[in-house]
Image 1 (tube, rainbow, N blue to C red):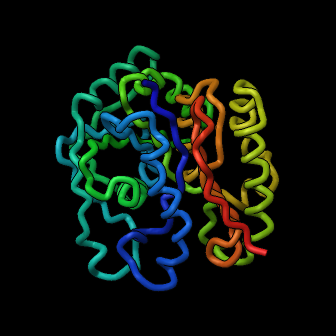
Image 2: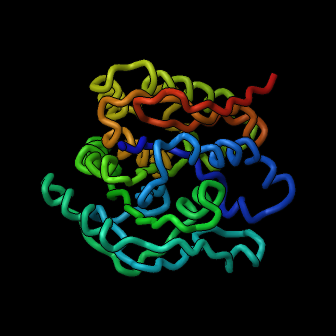
Length: 278
């Protein structure tokens, strides 16, 4: 069976391990992530995660059998710098990723030391809290060329039929200097464009639109730096001609931000988690 592909929000910092108002901001996101395993045709053999928190001069894949942790956030409680997400890696999958990249003429390096950053472990904790599914991390390439990341996704598409769940982990809106109610209008404008591009356009037009994403309404307000959007390009490349479904949407994140997440796959039965404030 062919696995779907996802572009997911990983929330803010180590939110699954927090309590209080900040944690409750992500309740709706958590519900959507917990529902994900039920949307799959079968349990995945492994997860290939493209995180918005890892970029290298060249595409790089983690090859560790037991990846460590990368605490790439600041200002959170002390206990969040000791949390563990003990999923195993998969050197065999990493080698397969390297091989597919080579076949496509895409330069890629191996990194035996890279651990899980919060773009990976905060996203996966609600999905697979038992951390039993092997996880391989894949970096973005510096420069954030959308076409290069779309091409990488296309090269990795065969993994879907091999039981691998490919996830781009980022945020549909990521402007930390405007991460509150002031973002209501620009986040809604960009999100409307993104939803249209992913769901309504034909596959070839979808890719062309994403290559020119910075011409979208409020694009550079939503993404002053596109590190949290570029994982979407890999997901869309791997999706091929598969249709997109919005599986998470809310317009009241952090007091007014519109955010969304998407599934790419022939089966459109995946239910969405939409929360729209009045």
